[in-house]
Image (cartoon, rainbow, N blue to C red; front, side):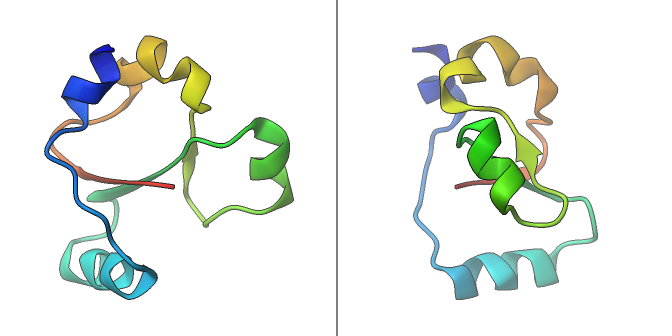
Length: 73
């Protein structure tokens, strides 16, 4: 899968580490990528998170800035 290559190397973060990542970078330098379904996203999501459902990720990678840190949830 093309997206697996795009997302490596990968590490897991807990919510505290994700918060620290955001605090250490200027606004907009960290992308929160929500890979759930639109209905789940509409029910609740992180402010500013970008929705790309997992099943669409392969075809929408060009929407992501590879120079930024991406936190996927």
